[in-house]
Length: 380
Image (cartoon, rainbow, N blue to C red; front, side, top):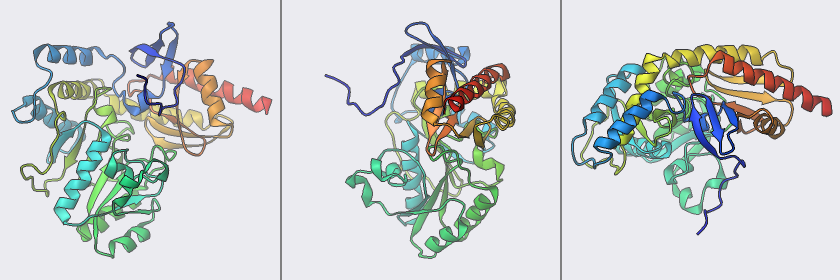
């Protein structure tokens, strides 16, 4: 048997990692400014994280959600404290796509309606409902296209109001920062207007913070820069630092009913141990604050590099709009300088490093990026 060939793979196999560094089978060391696609939040193989998982699996790794699990309660309390959402409830799942599926299901239960407003260039996942609200027909099978979804331009409140006037909208879902699209942010003013319009029309506002949440932007959630409080917040990626875990934070206005939502593996003992360890490290090592400080430094330094047209984003979720071809720059950084970076649409390099990255590590990247851009431009 062979693997179903759906991924374009770099010819590199990481076998060891620590902090912001990764080593391949040949012992080559790489600097990680991609974080496994924003998943590695507290750094690879953090000792507290490793210890928590080891101790948990030695006791009990899994039992179903038909019994009490005090780790879930501990996770909810610590997450509420660190995020500022102490009055919200937590439903635990396994991934970002599953989190979004449950968010939309809950919104539909609450409103009795079925249509969803999403935004052009959005990415929300690959399961049936999540891919239907993703603005990419290439990954939508005919099976996914029966959902009632309307896409409107980002930051266009009039377009949102026009769709809401039809009276059949259950939810609006929006990313804290659009990642796949090339790091585009909803403005604070737009989010504030959107929150008001949703409230006035009894439409559920869902903030997809799967990539932009968990301290990545210098706030616990990206939308917190705008001062709004959405009805539902979906999370995943950095939540487990590599262990599969996701979830939604749910406003007090929603009424829970037995059997409304469910999951087999969501909130299992190992997932909770991993997620608790992440919050412990984030708090004890001030990683949200570090993301803000290092991000501000990166934005300032990148702005002075010739060949960088624009830098977008916040904290450690940044998009670098390049003049030279993205693929050429990324290849040279990876295979010559041994630095992992990410990519996005429109020739944008995406930086999603662990929140623990240091100024010294960032300076290595900045130096090599500048040198590679200069070499490519000299050849062109």
